[in-house]
Length: 278
Image (cartoon, rainbow, N blue to C red; front, side, top):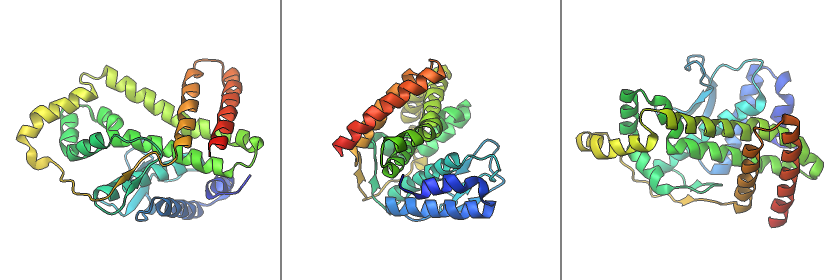
């Protein structure tokens, strides 16, 4: 298996001091920023983050990616995922501030992304008044886009390390348990919250666009970016992810041993198709 920074960090994680971990996470952020052609952020620990919050990118402090204080039981791939996730929020922020083009692995609904960015403050305020901040944080379009892009980025990098089918099997559990599994849980939870809320997200959007915008136009965010969006830059990878996510979702209710066996078989089959299509 070819070595990569992701694998290097995962393999060494348990032996590293907190200072060494932050140094490698900063290196990871620098690699991500170079890949995306955006500004590098400084990765720092912040013990004052809200309980349950693993990481944050804040518009009020756009030079940083804040991590909750690292613990001995933190899993390396989860922390790496948090760094990439918040770095992608920074990437989108740079795009809207006319600093960098946006190149994506997935399809993007640009019209919706621009509209929600323009209405962001109104959406947040309405969600806060209605007690729907969880719904807003889960269903805001940029959030789903970032989560999909995080999955695709890790899949892309892990596959680059694979030299044979044995390597594919080695990265299977790492990817499905910590990357695709996290996306599955998010997608399922977001859907459940939307369906059980007193106001569903589409209704929240409609309320903001028909009522709030009439009275609070001064809260609209001005968008003047001249940068471009390049989506689906790697169509084979996206098709591979979509196929495997369907399999992953279908097998969640079955016995774990059976699911793992079937998932491995489907994943390897799709890897072969993906490799031939490259």
